[in-house]
Every structure is written in structure tokens, then in C-alpha cells.
Length: 490
Image (cartoon, rainbow, N blue to C red; front, side, top):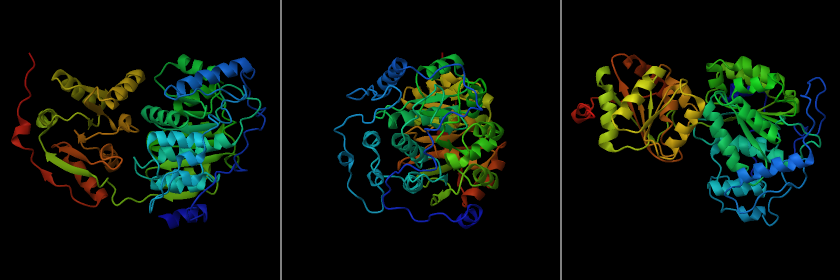
């Protein structure tokens, strides 16, 4: 695979540098250029010193609510100070070397960024982080393939933050001109990336914004007009809406990330993404990072169009499915599926479970029945308004809800620590979705369990899944006690 990819893109570096100092790339350090005259601005002048200072202070208070000191702008026209706390030094965040591991410290990242990484408890890079950062911190484009949960989000966020800290913003800035752009296919994934970005930038003064459909447009616009935008995370549709209304201009983008490119292809977003990319600088005037769970012919064609001589990073796993996930299949009649689901959760006192179904109406019915029968549950599907989806995800993440029932599209991008079990109420029609589903558990070195219900209507989906995995999954009859009737509520 790698040999074929190199044939497409040409030979690139094959060895990971032992330590990389993040220089400012001459290719992407274009932030100081004048706005393109061919792309009109709204009749709005750059922010005044007072407005800029107020916006930065407001953003700093939001990002540093748990910090000991607030960030004050060194220059009213800049969204970040040159230093947050002068006494911070890179040496303050050194960790002991470990055999076979790359430390974040090895890349000589800014102390502000290292402090945030240390707060998150990640002293060592995951394999994809170590490899990707070895290229991207030197200004090189990159395309990466890795399974979900491998740390790719932090890989591109660290690269973006370093670029923005190393390159001063332009002297004349307009509201609605992001310096870094991240495009992701689903609302939940955008929210997750923006949350991770906020955690990593909390000591830098950089502003992170997120745009998704289903949320109040005017509220998002008000946020956009309140302060400069450094990092923008958005779904294609809502971003294009802002752009076409003249609220967001993309000609100052220094770094662009396309996350889950294969999923954007599946969901039909590529025409919108093409329109968005046309508004950004040429590919040799920006750094472009593309990530995908698979390197299909279509994905590689897009990567060739949108990147320049990219480094290719592939993280091979020991198997397609996470080895830490114990997989089971129960042969069960369709009429007994709900009883089996209820008893599995109730009898075992499970408190952090994801249940997947193929259709939105199935998701709704399952959630309604669980709630009626005394099990706290929320649904995650396209029928749920976005503000309710965000609250549902937060309630599930905080443990206030035991069960999340989701479709594949809505479940994409949901990364919640501590999910003990994934239940496939219906087997997915696409084998790749099976791997994605069970990857919601067994994350970050923890163990997990997946249980699939194979009824008469979906047992046909099992052989293709086994073919993809390369092994059989033992199909068993559920214990009798798991098929007892659900108690009636009075």
C-alpha cells in the first residue's frame, strides 16, 4: 500500500526525526500578506484597539477559567500575547525518556502548549502523533491513516497551535478571518475537536470557534463578530453558509485540516468541501493535513488535488478491530432483542453503554422503551435538534445518563472515555461501520466488550464483517435469564 502511495505522491521522508524544532515554514508563513482584493469584505473595519482588547480578555476568561492567571494581550491587534507567564520554561515540562516512546518535549513545543499537554496527562506521543508531528512541525503537508482513538486529533491540533504561535498574525486583521481551518463531517466530531482545541490553547490566548448546523446562526455570528478567530472548526454546510453570506473569509488560512475524509465522501460532502477549498489560498501557500480511516482510490485522488508533496503516515494495527475489545454475537429473534438488551443492562448494572441501530426510527423506539422501563437513556440521531444532541452527549460523558442509542452517522466522532460496552442492536450494513462501532469501547488501553444481536433480518451482515476482520466471531445463544420478560411499570 505504502509503495503504491509513494508512486502517486513521489518519494518523501521515511525516517522520523529524533527531535524537531518547529520552524516557521516559508511555504505557509503567509499570514502577513494583504487581504485579496478580489474577495470583498463586509463594510466593517478591522477591530479597534479597545474592541480587540475586550474581545481577547473575554476569550481569555473563558479559556482560562481554571487557570491561575488571566491572559492579557501584549498588542491589541493580536489575539495572543507573546508570553503567557514569563516564568514558564520548556524545561519545566520535561518527562523521563522511555524506550520506544517519543516525548512531546522532544519536539521543543512552546511552554504554553506543553503546559496544556501536561494538564491533559499525555507526556508521550501515540505512534501517529510521533510520526505526523515529525513532518508537520517542519511545515510539510501530510495525509494520515489510523484507526479511531489513536490520537490523530491532538496530532493536527499541536501542529496548528505551533504554527500560529510561531507566526505573528497580520497587522491588519478583520473579524471572520480564521488562520487555521478544520473541516469535519459531523456535528459531534466538530464539537469534540473544538473542545480538544480549547483545552490545548487555554494558556495561549488563541481563540477557537466552532460552526455547526442545527445551532442558532445569529448566536454563532455574534461570537464571530466579538473577537478575532484563530482556529475555526466547522461542518461543510454551515461553514459554506457563513462564507457565502460574507461573514467568513478564508483567504488568510495558513493551515487547513480535512478530518475523516472517507466519511465526508460517504456523506456526499465533497462538492461543498471543494467550494470551501477554492476560497482558501493555493495549496502551495497553505499547509494541508488530511486524515482518513481508509486510503481508498477516491480519498487518495482528493489528497493529490489538495496537498503538495505530502508525507504519508500509516499506522498499522495488529488487527482491524481493537484487540482490547472482546467480541460476542448472540443469535436472537427480532422479537426478543429488546428483552435481551434490557436484561443485559439491568442485570449487570452497566452504567456506560452505547447501543447502535441502523435507522433513526429504531433509535427513537429503543430510547423511548429504555426510558419508560427505568433505564436512563438518550438518543443521538439526525432527528434530534443540535442543542439537545450536545446536551445529551454531555450528560452521557458526565455519567448522568447510562445509555446512548445512536445511528452510525450521529455516533461518528463520539469519543467518550470509559464506555464499557457497545451493543449492536442491529448489525451494520457496511462492515467498516462495525469496526467503527466497537471502537467506541476499549479506548486508551482500557478493555471493552461488544455484543451484537444477529436476528433473522440482519444475520446476512455477519459474513462480510468476519471477512473484513479475517476471523470468525463465535455466535452463541443468549442465556435464558437474559430473555425473561421486562417488568411492567405501574
